[in-house]
Image 1 (cartoon, rainbow, N blue to C red):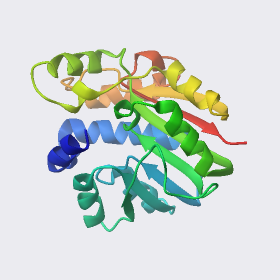
Image 2 (image 1 turned 60 degrees about the vertical axis):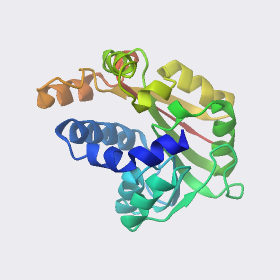
Image 3 (image 1 turned 45 degrees about the horizontal axis):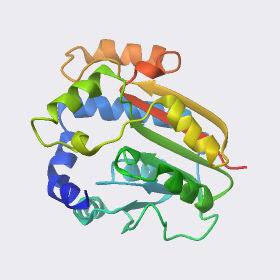
Image 4 (image 1 turned 90 degrees about the horizontal axis):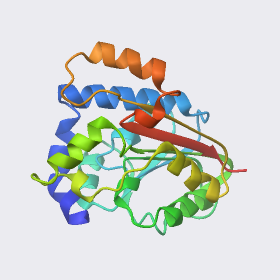
Length: 223
């Protein structure tokens, strides 16, 4: 998997500049940051890729470090002036209680032992610290289409494991997190042309229709 992400790093980063990529990025960030309760402090962007959320956290005033297993992704992230390290999500290279916030967006789809990673996230958080995990929802129309496409063309979705909101909530509660909640956005397929309408639906339905959303996020606090 690491070799695959090394190969696609440039293409992955460029996708955020496409029309669909801009809509998805804008909408997912709206959801993530509307759920956050932590407004400052030290943050870890776990599975940072090319630094999309690392950069946003830095812009918002966090002292942030990104971590990823792909050197190809990290090379691009570092070119943006970001503090990023190569590391293993199963054994984070940080002491206990290092962070006020751990954010992980579209990484959990590509790990095999999610309980172990959640336990590591819990360990490196300070008491009162917050975790937010965002993933693709395997029950959405968007990603059923993407998964079908991956049978014929190699994409990251070929290797992904998708989660539902309830599964993400169970992961966090199982690790000892409290105040656990979930939400979701993106209800239309990627070829839907009316992004203004889509964003209106996202903002109205992100709570009550989260099980149908393409992107789901869960947050919890360490007591």
